[in-house]
Every structure is written in C-alpha cells, then in structure tokens.
Image (cartoon, rainbow, N blue to C red; front, side, top):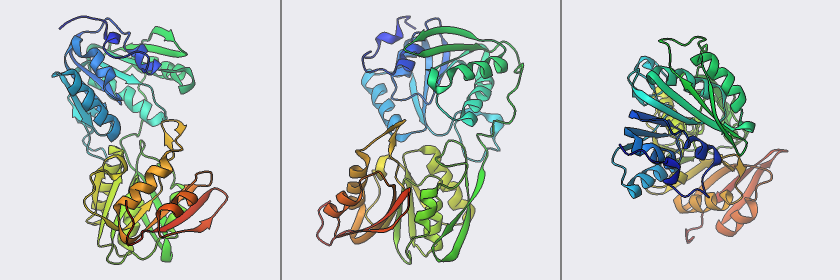
Length: 382
C-alpha cells in the first residue's frame, strides 16, 4: 500500500468541504475500510491507496452510478461499490428489509459524511461499533448547521472517547475509536431497521395499510401530497401503471386495489424500492420495482403514470425538476395515456404541461398542493 495524501486524488475546487475534511484523516491504514453513504466515489478513492479493500456504499442510485464511474476511471481494483440500505451486522437478520451485511469486527476504518435524521445517525453509531475491529476508528465530518456538535456528544457516549481532528469551513472532523467490547453508553433502540405502519385512503372510499421505515421520504406519517393524490386516482382497471418516485409504494398498492393489471414502482432510492417490493409481497401483489433516476431503463410505455415527484436536490430546491419530470412522463406514456401528478403550489407544472400534452388540467388546488391530470396526444413527440 502506498501512503500518500488522499486529498490530492481528486480536484479540490469541486469537493464538498466536509468530504475534503474527511480526506485529511491521514493516520489510517489497514485491511478493510467502509464508507457509508459515500457519494460519488471521491472519498473511497482518496483512501484506496491505504487499504487492501474499500467498500463504497450508497443508497441513492445516481450517486452509486457516479461512484462506479469514478472507480472505473481511476482503475481502483480494490474498491467495491454497493447499493442499498445502511450496512449492518449479521445479527440484524430480523430487520424489515434485506440489507448489506458484514461480520462483526470486520473493518479497520469506517467513514461517514454526516446527514440528517436521528434514527439514521443512531444506526450508524450502533452498526459502526459492531462492524469495527478492536482498535478500529469511525471518522465523521459534517457542517455545524447539520448537527455535528450534537452528534459528537452522542458518539462520545457510545464509543467512550472522542477526538476532534479538524475544523474548516464551518465543518468538523471527529474520530471515535473502538476501545471496548461493548459500548460504554449504548444507544437505546435506534429503530432504523424496523418498519413503521401507516394508512392511505384512496379514491372510491378504499383504505389500505402499508409499511415504511426511516431513510424513506415521509416515514413518520403519510405525506399530505400523496394522500391528496390518492383521493383523485382514476380507475386502473386493466392498465399498466408506473408509480414514478414511488417511495414506500403506497400509490402502487392503491393502483392494484383499483384494478391495475401491472405496476412498476420506480425510485432513485434503493431503500424505497426495497420497501415497495416488500409491500407488494406482504399484500400478495405482483408489482415490480426499478431503482433508477427518473425510471431510466423502464421497459416499454404505460397507460397511466402516478407521481408525487421530489423538488429538492439535497437541501436545495431544484427548479429544473418539473421540466425533466414532465418530459420523462411524456416519454414513458403510451399515446392517449394519462398521468396524475401532485406538486407544491410554487412549482411551475401547469404552463409547461400545456405545451407538452394534448390535455393538461388542474383537478384540485389547495393552499399547499395542486393535482394535475395530463393526457398524451396520439402524435406527441417525446
């Protein structure tokens, strides 16, 4: 293994400051390293020269694809990219979703770029302790506004130690070392890997239950936009249906209840598509799932598309998304097919939809949401 400055591996000017700070952790070498929710591969690439094996984990398909491209471009034979829920130990076999599992005491180093969500952060601490070999380290960086200081206190209690290794650009780099067989102050019941049961009322007076979990959009309660759209669903009798941005798959389940002959649930999140697949199985419905960006790779065209699309890219509102989503819908609809979409009031769907579709009408407008119905013309060019 070659010891060199990992931060020199990739262009610095485009690098997330928290990732750059992680790359300044210079003392680490060993057999195995794991980077959780690692992003586009720059982090794993930076540490590849120091470890015999590096695992680059993502839950987002777009980031996973970018990481694969980075690994291929740099020729990193010792880096393996994996897509799925948070990595965990074999002892979590009873978890709700199938997961990425490793033996206990497997890694010398685990790296994590801090995200949001208490359940997820607790799960990272609990599983990192289990997955680390004795003497192994968890390194974490994040912005002050993202809660890195409160995470430091939580991690210090769980590991029994804390080293602040750097501060830059309002970000902090923390190191926790596994120095005991069990956590000095165990975190109680992170509940990240266990399901939450919710209900969805849909058109025609129907109601169904479905399962979701932390790590998926609107896991605490059914999203208000999804709930509103569900009350406007048309008959799906004999139709092929695409649930675009499916989340846990609640609208997919409703489509089957309304007579759909086939349903594809598509989402960019591997956690979401795994949850949708689990819900199909629990309800005995023959739905299929696709983890990709904007249903790329979907087989064929659909009679009906249902969607409650996102409007964020990370924490920022992405005003290019409506145009991209509408073009995706147009491309994936059969001529004469229709789409039902719910969007926040401030997003411009109506004007763009009227330019692309034979029919584009608003079915309902509330203070927060708009329900759009669109029909593809017989001669539309997608």
